[in-house]
Image 1 (tube, rainbow, N blue to C red):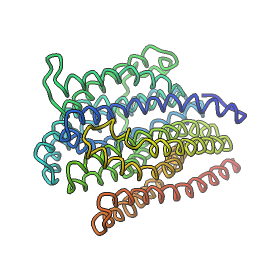
Image 2: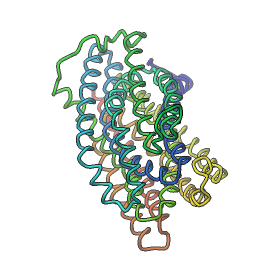
Image 3: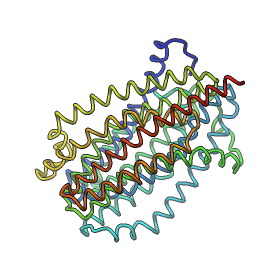
Length: 453
């Protein structure tokens, strides 16, 4: 990371950070994408089972990993303020905390998964596949959460290309093990959709191993001497991480869990409807990697500039990020509109699933504009370490406005399953509007504080 003085310099630095993040996010997401696509090739029940399993896992993972995302602005501000000696201690405390969170999730999941699945109106085979998928995935929880911390450290230094390389190296392995375990090739058992969970867990162990090796051997990471000294657990430092991370984690949880909640509510519809809904959500989420990556890049650059007390530069980066997100939203909407059926055919060969998916994808177009505004603003606010109000706004937008509206439309109008999607669109729009208002307030306050120093 370095100080910039012109729009051209900022654009070059920002794109140098955001493009590797985008490739990394797409690569990580492709693991879920591959799970869904390859499970769909195994059968509609496998696709539905993995859809239900993912709907239970994704909000838990994203919410708790969101807590660990707080490591990024913490380290970015340390570096901006030239307090590099504090970095390795913060990273190690994050690693310790990630392991504790992993064990907590593992234990809670062991006692609750059966209860949750049994309360859902699912076919027996779909329920079994969902459970087995989650069991396989659980073996990768610890390495996944540890990697979240290590990646935050790597990205906060501005070396987002390293995270990109790690992901690109591991993705082919995920595909290979999916092929072997889902379809029972080369002497491996045929596990169907459940095999995707085990394949992804194996990949998570490979990712964290590569990250640790790079941090221990490559410049500039080796200069911070992470893993060279195992500090004692600092509950006060955990408190600092959690104070910043919990609102981030809850905000991400409420944002992602609403999609999972809709999928679970759709268990009252047919297996074909569940499968088609999941396909549309899966592809829409793939496109969401663009504004999400811009959001993550903004957390880094805004955190760096705020740490150095350069608020005008922080505002310029925010405008740059939102501008790029809006441009890409238009492109994403066009892709969905013109290629509905070909997109659906990537996931399934079932004509009923393809037809219904094409209809759901039309609604996904309207997600793009709201995401292009809300996601980058959330990233900028995290760079300012402003997270509490964002959490409240997210809760209200998605769970007070979006989900109830969707439930009413789905159950009391002829819209049926499409009613949930209209509710999601309304919730996302409300979030975009309120977050914009919050960003303007935070920017004014930050500038006023610096002027008085």
